[in-house]
Image 1 (cartoon, rainbow, N blue to C red):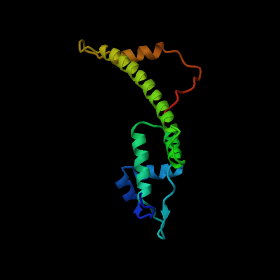
Image 2: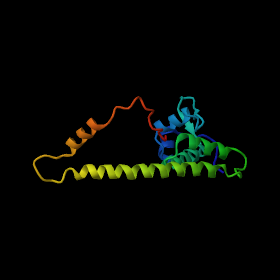
Image 3: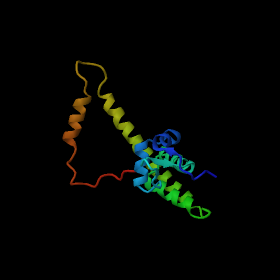
Image 4: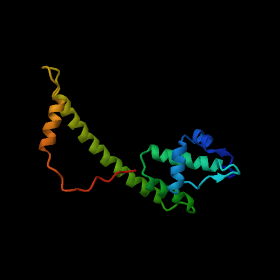
Length: 152
């Protein structure tokens, strides 16, 4: 089991966990990490347990999990046992998000390829900018449509 005695200043915690000092402060603000213990000199200090938690968060974020998904997994970890497979449900939801995003990226790739095909290297002018202007003129102005849900 990781020790709980705080001994790493925030810069060392950042280096040892792979999470920037700014993100450590942000995760504290978001409640994903307990605030570092303050020493007499007001430096923040972090324990090995804190470093493990930061690496856990970094791993989840590297898999593009939102802060809410990370929060859910951390809460499940803190709950006794974790035998009800709730973590699997969180992972299944995230997999659905990833699959949706993959479909969106495939569509984006096709749009970019079509746009790139407009500039075939012939003539004196690249037609990519022209094509973007044409598309901008053809796009209807949305009636304050809600922005797509961002997965953060």
